[in-house]
Every structure is written in structure tokens, then in C-alpha cells.
Image 1 (tube, rainbow, N blue to C red):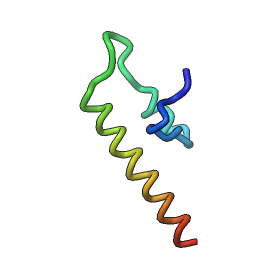
Image 2: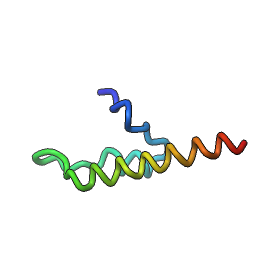
Image 3: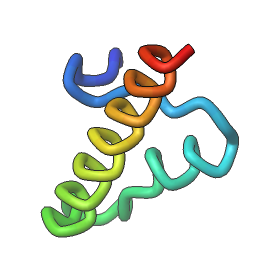
Image 4: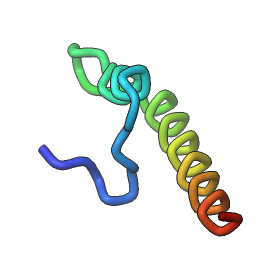
Length: 54
């Protein structure tokens, strides 16, 4: 399954575990999902600003 387009693909192993660490029973926690979305957006903004500075 491909990741959602708005959700950046995690790079490091720790990011990958945090990304794929949903509970196996009965779906994902919406609060954890929104927190991961916010973190991904901050990461994308940080890499974009770093690319602009370079």
C-alpha cells in the first residue's frame, strides 16, 4: 500500500517505526494520527526551508 500523498515517507528506522506503529486491533488512534500528521508537516517545512537557505 502506497503512503498518502500528503504524508511524507519516513526516512530513518525510528521514524519508520513511529509511522507504522498503529495498534493492530480495531484501527488507529485519531489523536496519534493527527500528531503524526503535524510532525510530518513540520518536517516537510523544515526540509523545504533548509533547501531554500542552501
